[in-house]
Image 1 (cartoon, rainbow, N blue to C red):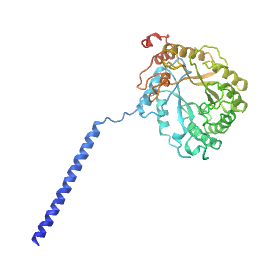
Image 2 (image 1 turned 180 degrees about the vertical axis):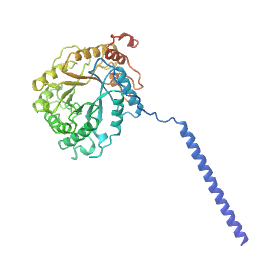
Image 3 (image 1 turned 30 degrees about the vertical axis):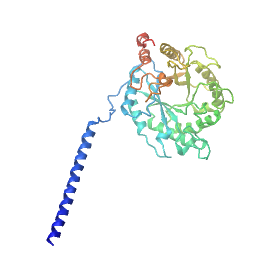
Image 4 (image 1 turned 135 degrees about the vertical axis):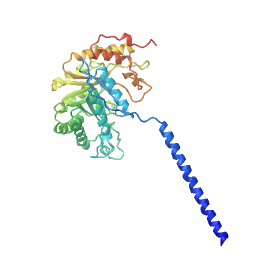
Length: 393
């Protein structure tokens, strides 16, 4: 019996020692994890400072931003701060429907709240572009192509209700709401045949919902892409023809402004407009068509030149600056033009291709020469392009 008792005690002590050993190593491991985590810098926070105001002599100047997909909050804040310092008082930003209403009737406004709060803090107004359909609102038919740009008729009202909710929430900061983007391109229309009549129907459903909910918010239709696609093309429709048919279908009564995209490509800003040319002044042809149906103003929501060294539709950095400034001065003389928004301030990540050369600043927030030229323009300073040009390649 004594021997058995000694064996039991030995086993119990061994178990106790083993348990204490495990506890000791567990505490050491926890301490190590805590020490390592303390070496990682905390995530940079974007703290609101004193409210700012934009100082500018060019109230039409506007920049298109790409903030919604930024990972770090401070990058949103820094982008808006640099835009304010440049002298632009308005931005265009994309607010994807699918991000904010992932399930029908279930809204999550956190990211939009953050962007809007910081835009307000910098004294900026926002033209909000609406699109990007959540899965629950897309076509349900098996075998039917469905993309984030697929919006069936039965979802027009749901899209309008989302835009109305957005308008109510942010009405005090909005310069307007842009209903859809480039509907005259098949990609932007969900790879369906583009249809001006269907787009006019979308406006007819969505616009009254927004106006009822937030009467002070302007509604922008169109955001037409500049293209000369021939009749019957599977890729899209000429923007001049599309606008004519869109207006014939009654779209004008559901818009407060027409949004258009007009790029310069390789042509100077003052090249005369012509139906067979894609250039900056093509917007004048769109304006003439619009005036025949309704005397509505226009907002250029995308515009600019590109200075990629190997893209066939690009120009040199110096010409990019010159043509951009020339286009802005032309826009000053058009009383029907409300906003002149340049594409694009900055991308969240680099493309390593020609799109990077539309930007005003790098992904690392290094201002490019055109940024300084635009700042001089917005502040009413003499043109000082030469001192901002890069060294010859």
